[in-house]
Amino acid sequence: MGKKAAVVFVIVMAITHLIKAQIYIANACEITFFSPTSIEDIAAKNTVTKPLLNVQTGDFQMKIPMISFIFDKPLMQEHFNENFVETEKFPYCFFKGKINEKIDVTKDGQYEVTSTGVLTIHGIDKERTITGTLTIKNAEITLSSKFNILFADHNIKIPALYSGIFPSDTEVKFTATLLPYKKN
Amino acid sequence: MTSIKKIITISIFCFIGSALFSQNDMLNLLDSIGEKKTHNKTIATFKGSKIINAQTIEPVKKRTMDFNITHRFGNIGEASNGGGHTLYGLDNVADVRIGFDFGITDNITLGVGRSSQNELIDGFVKYRFLSQTTDNHIPFSIALYSDMSYNPQTSSQFYRGAIETSKRTELQRVSYATQLIIARKFGWRFSMELIPSYQHRNFVVGVINPDNGAEETNGIFSMGVGGRIKITQRFSIIGDYFYSFSNYRNNNSENPFFAPLALGFEIDTGGHIFHLMFTNSAGIIENNYIPHTTDDWLKGGFKFGFNISRVFNLGSKKRR
Picture (tube, rainbow over the protein chains, first blue to last red):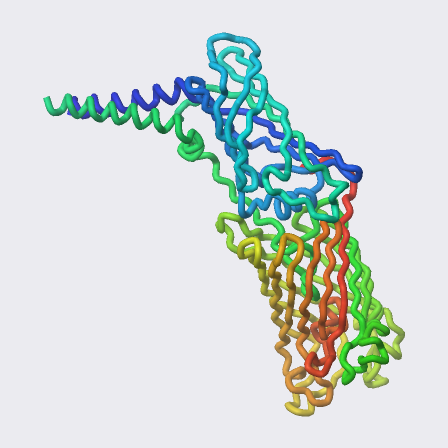
């Protein structure tokens, strides 16, 4: 009995210790994109994504539910999901990458960082290196970044009727506050 | 001895396992922490508020207005007053309706419209009280649709065929149609709906079907079916059909009746939705096309027609 308990104890310790120490999860995250056009601005906001960061290895991943991009104009939101990113076929967009710089959570400050990885939108993978800032304050990590996505990179088709009116890319802004992941 | 070995091997496995876990796909963690499962509503089961004749499950979205023009030309076939002399029906107008639908909430729509045929003025409410979810937690969407129409024609037109001495009241000019719309989106390509309907016309001329002795009734039960097959993201084939459970309408040789059947195409340009279709029904609203379709597809009694729908945003206040 005693030995069994010891085994279980070691296992539990191993798992919780490792996860606790390495992985940070967002408690707040905001992803927006914006494209101006001559008729109306195309803009949406997603606040439900939970990016994950492994501070030891630098692994940085997120899974963004496309249905949770909220637009001001409901019809625009429907067209976005139905005609452009085809949410039913591709419900999530992913980023799976690494933050290239070493992260030391014990040192407060603001750091310029780059993250290299694969961005998957509309089922199409694209290797990207994205620059941003990483701020550490009291063991809380804030990540923020601004970058562009070309629709053509992800096979998002613009109808011929709108060529010339519709932009070919969109500006994405990303901010997330991450805290150490705690097992419930 | 063995138990110590066990502990060591297990803890090694455990460390390796958790190390792999944390390096390969951290996203599994999102599942393991039991993220709150949300049942996302299926979007765009249909594009506009109509398939062709039938109402779709879709309400107009909150704080938007759908302006729609529905047009039916005359019969195409020569045997049904069409043919070359009317440019295959294009010289004639069977019915035109101009309508405004307002999104009160994301699930409740109020609409008004006026049709040229019988000068019908109608108002309706559509309430979607159940929405299909993408994870099939709820497999169907269900809406209640209720339309009331008023016929302002002159007495001689409205009471055509009725006995002169019959009692006449203003309320007789009112008709009601109530439908349950049960719809499902089967993947992005195919959507379908069933529409059990009941309608009541306050006044009908008391005629009898000479072939089976059945009398015309104020109330009629009918069953509609409609669907859409998407060919591309913006181009679809659409169709709908209504069968009426009415003995008077069954094999009536004196006043032949045919079930309304419509087939067409849907083109979505982003701002507008266009329907181009052929249908044997002349009327546009439920109170008209379900009980009053008298043209036969097989005798060329079908018309070219179109629906145009344009959605406007009302107010610039942020949603939610």
